[in-house]
Amino acid sequence: MPQHEPKNALVTGGTSGIGLAVTRLLAQSGHRVFLCARTEDSVTSTVKMLQEEGLDVDGLPCDVRSPHDIDRFVRAAVDRYGSIDVLVNNAGRSGGGVTADIQDEVWFDVINTNLNSVFLMTRAVLTAGGMREKPRGRIINIASTAGKQGVVLGAPYSASKHGVVGFTKALGNELAATGITVNAVCPGYVETPMAQRVRQGYAAAYGTSEDKILEKFQAKIPLGRYSTPEEVAGLVGYLVTDTAASITSQALNVCGGLGNF
Ligand SMILES: NC(=O)c1ccc[n+]([C@@H]2O[C@H](COP(=O)([O-])OP(=O)(O)OC[C@H]3O[C@@H](n4cnc5c(N)ncnc54)[C@H](OP(=O)(O)O)[C@@H]3O)[C@@H](O)[C@H]2O)c1
Image (cartoon, rainbow, N blue to C red; front, side, top):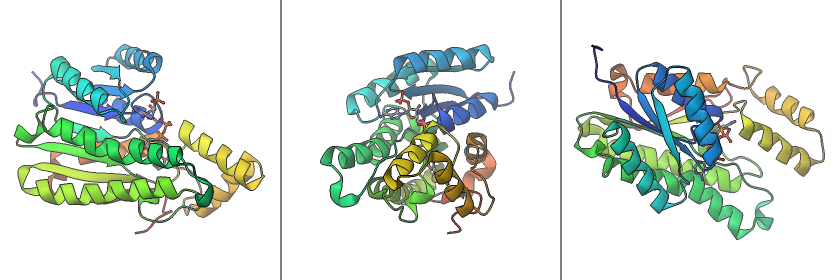
């Protein structure tokens, strides 16, 4: 018999980058993890890959911009594993450009994907997911150092991540006495498929190469390199422990010194 009952975790955007590293680490530390992303094939192949690693992982396609999908996803997770102990709101997108030229669709989609989803998923997990009834819970929102400082050509992204940090602080204080902690993890530059797309976007905007953009970004990071998805997952892995019970309402950076605020 394990010393502790396994805990049930939900991870959004669990098929790539940071979400995949978080899913693997939580499952390796004894969680049953139910993940989502929009692309059915990648959900199926990720679940299969992790199950073949001996991990207790399952999942469903779910678009975190859709209240209907969220409701279905949370109910399916509860049916599969039981009520939810840990929620990691990770799914997100980049997006921006010259602010005066940003189309409505881009602005609203970045806010829907990165911010409104965090409220909708969190509310569903607290209610239908049963977390509100538990003596202990963990909600971790993957924000960004862009949630603490402005990013040039990234107004919608920066606004959405500042919103996630504000939501985290407010809900953390609201739930502090309940045993549910709420924290934001703020990565700086992390080598993932999203980071590659971001470098492509800046290379096009500045009329330069992706290698030059990489050099420019690395030069801004005191550590001199991008963080890894596993380094971000490591902090999530700590925040879910019992020892982290008094860490709540915080926005903690994993960024090689990029942000020191
Ligand atoms: N990489 C960085 O440098 C960096 C820095 C700071 C913060 N972050 C944040 O970290 C989080 C993860 O980023 P990443 O770099 O790991 O990105 P990534 O490699 O692009 O992975 C994003 C994941 O989210 C899923 N996703 C995207 N939109 C979704 C939606 N509407 N509904 C459900 N799932 C969705 C993607 O799958 P589908 O496309 O199949 O849906 C994928 O699984 C994001 O919130 C990002 O803003 C990243």
